[in-house]
Length: 277
Image 1: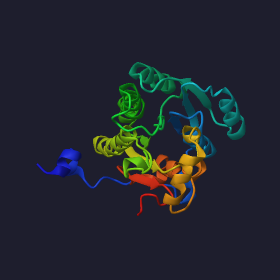
Image 2: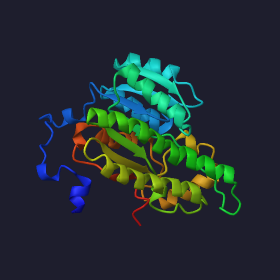
Image 3: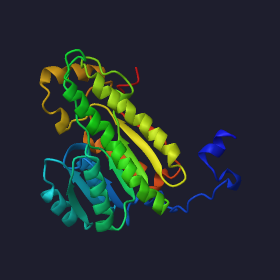
């Protein structure tokens, strides 16, 4: 038995027919008529992605944990004329994830795009000094939370025969970020890159899975760090600065839209060149 027949049981029927795509390149990026669910979307990267998707015409399900999204829901609805609703859930709790995804499907009728973006950062603490509680929290939120979401939304994608699952990984999954001792955090992000590739093969018959690995991005997750810490990053970034959340949204739009119908199992590093040297 060949590896191709393992990945695609319908190997005898290949080649499959390509999708029927819009003739205009810009139309490929439209999300009109689609429903996007985004975890960790009350601020930072998740919020920027949510607004970009709303601009592209998608209806939006916002996930939050501690920061309410009522004002965001009202603003996006009014500004872009799409349906937006917020859902409070802890991504580290499987039952909450399952209930939330079921509620979104019921409220919106389906889920076409799922961005597994929620995550927690790490302080610079060597493994020998770190607490196991901090380690377990990182694993539960950054890894388990994405796995739980995939397990639940994957059933919807399989039922519909379509879907796009996008994981927010990190440059830290590719390279050890010097001057910061964060072995556990780096490990969670490396796991997500491999999870995306593995899911891409599992779901190749009905959905696409890709990941995005941002570098140092100016968001709330790193706002607590003092100037003395951040000033050590900048010389190591060839572009000499942190990125902005809006500088990532084009990648998320690409993976969510019909512009990427032949892209699965990919990881896109957006880090100002940090991983190049």
